[in-house]
Length: 280
Ligand code: URA
Image (cartoon, rainbow, N blue to C red):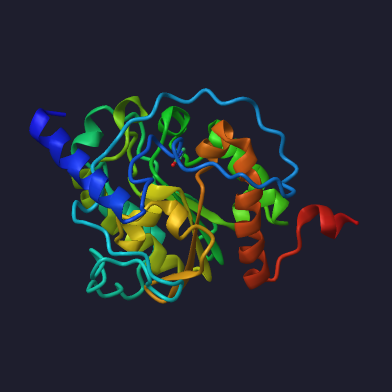
């Protein structure tokens, strides 16, 4: 980052800080704020984290955030979302979207990727999880959330009384950012129309954003996830809730209890029974 960009970011962060909004940048989910609560978490025992040190990205989009507002529908949007005006494509399917994506070279992420990670799961899922972008394992296998964070996500899904094939899992960007850096604004802007189409085609009952990047993109906000994590919001007519990214939980296992509370809200909307409770 050059000096002038750094100054801009610092000024922006100071401004955010004055508003009482702090977590505006982070590495890939690793710097999301830690919970201080110690409520029961999903059964999964998690190995110790091995994440990279925090990276930063200017806020997306780079405009000052609104002051915090009470929880309600769209309490955090800064304006029309990138795709708010986009019509749903009639009879769109995941197959058509994958075909349109092709061997994508639309942004610079294609240069170093191994495989495109389009998404995986039930095309008629009631529940869609949206992550940030593929990591190393995903890039190798062409499937989302198959690395350590993915194993934790699988445990979370199973704790909800579901199996992975019951849900759909995808990411904001479909190609791995080099060195697992954060996706950049132009990459997100280029790739996210495909995510929008995926969500429109699946029409789930609930979208769970895993981490800040997905939440900020779908809600068109700069606000840090801690400002709205666990609140019911809306995205193009669908209930949306944002929770911490599993990679963040690998570093901060104490936050699992927060995530479990969020997932319990989802379970209640979807009429799901927790796995352990159901087994009794
Ligand atoms: N992290 C993500 O955000 N997505 C993946 O697919 C894997 C790790």
